[in-house]
Each structure stands twice: as C-alpha cells, then as structure tokens.
Image 1: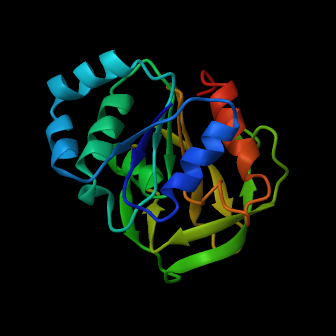
Image 2 (image 1 turned 90 degrees about the horizontal axis):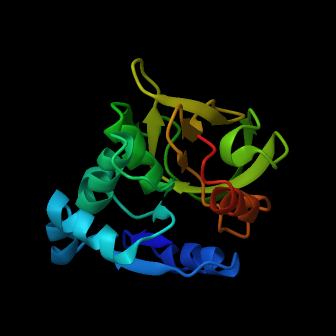
Length: 204
C-alpha cells in the first residue's frame, strides 16, 4: 500500500492502521521538492511501476488540497482511469479527489472542528458496507466538500446534523473518500472502513 503523507500529525496512525490490517505500507512524503518532481506524469508513473502498490491512500494534512501537488496529481490520474489500483482519500485526500472531479472545497459553514465525534448517515455502499447508520466518526477539518452538479462521485455519507459531505465513492472506478479520520479512537467503525477498502478494492 502506498501512503502519501501530507504532513498531518495523524499520518503515521493511518499508516499503522493499514499495517495492522496485514499490509505492507510504503510512506511517501507528499509535500517536499521530491514530491513536486513526482507530480510530473513520467516521474510518477515510473515510481508506480517500481513500487507496484496494490492500493494508494491519499493522507490527511493541513491546508487545502492545492497545497499538496502530488496528492492532486494522483487524484487527477485516478479519476482519468489511468491508475489500475484502488484509491482512498482521507480528510485532505478526500477533498483532493472531490476537487479533481470538479467539486468545490470550501471553509466549513459550521466552522473548524478538531477531534469532534459526529454522527454520519450513509447508504451502506462502498466502504460503508459493513457499518451501521448512523455511526459515529471523528472529524479534524476546517474545509469541506461542497456538492455541485456534474461530478462523477456518488455521495454515500453525510453528517447527520448538518448534511455536510462525509463520504464519496466513484460511480465507475474503485475510488473512495472520507472526510473523517477512520484511524481515530473516536471512530469505532473506522478500522472496518479501512479493512473494507483493502479487502474489496473493486467496489466502485
């Protein structure tokens, strides 16, 4: 599993949760000069050919998706169908996928949250296949995805109280995004989300 580290304080927790699911994890820094160089398609696909990851996880991080060029590059290639492997975006990674698909990423109209458990209602599809609804997950974010027309994602999770977008899955590719932190101790079903991604990669 290739994990893109966007300098979030929880990055290693996400990588550890993946490793505890029985997968080898390669952590790649997503916000340095090397990452900027890897945003070039030739360099990026050379790297993927060498590493041959089975999955890609676009990790959380501070700031906006545009601050993470490697993550945005991977998001664009995934949405173009140029990656033959499943992709999961967590928090900022989720926002990057949505932004690459033409959706807006805006400051949350309800303000930033840090370590706040929220109830999320979902439709039981994609990564929510084994989770009950509503279910508690923990958020750490100030930006959110703003739904608009013309995107190829299906919104499969929303915050119960506000209706904010909390989960997306692509209509035809194995690409998923979650705004919350599945690795958090405040997300009781979070490990099941990660496991679902790793076990059922073809579920678009």
